[in-house]
Length: 186
Image (cartoon, rainbow, N blue to C red; front, side):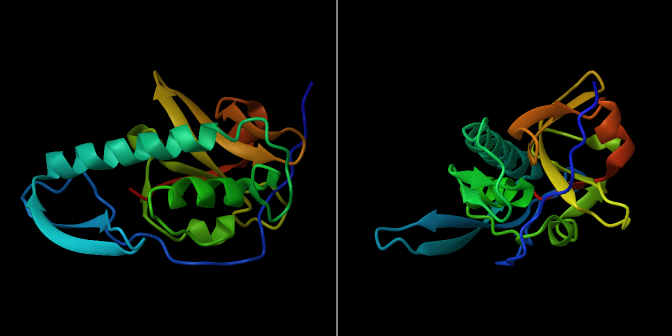
């Protein structure tokens, strides 16, 4: 039985992606801007010299926090343009999850697909974003967050029009056929 999932995406746009994304290919110490909340609900930015390994470990912690928060929305119904537990679309889920770690992303999936760095399927890790072309217009129209990447199986959380927020596998025929690219934001 094949379910047909159509694209999702809101029409509102907000914010920009974090431009300080990290990549393990960097090998030297480099300045990293860390953001610290203060009592007034504003943020203080401090520059620190950290090793790439330290920065990578910090980004792994952030990725896991994003995944954990996204999973709290499992079972939430689909709502075009939605960004709350009352209903959300695919880009709404991704935006809300990343915002939990103070990372602002554009509101629609095709705009999110311009942020971060493109990576190959061989490099995919938890916390990366998978993009799909689910319409006949040949444009990015759907996004999911990788929650598991083990032994060649990639699982991602996303919001579908038929089932709401669920975890799917990239091995499912529909998603394998609609797959477009992978991007790393952090």
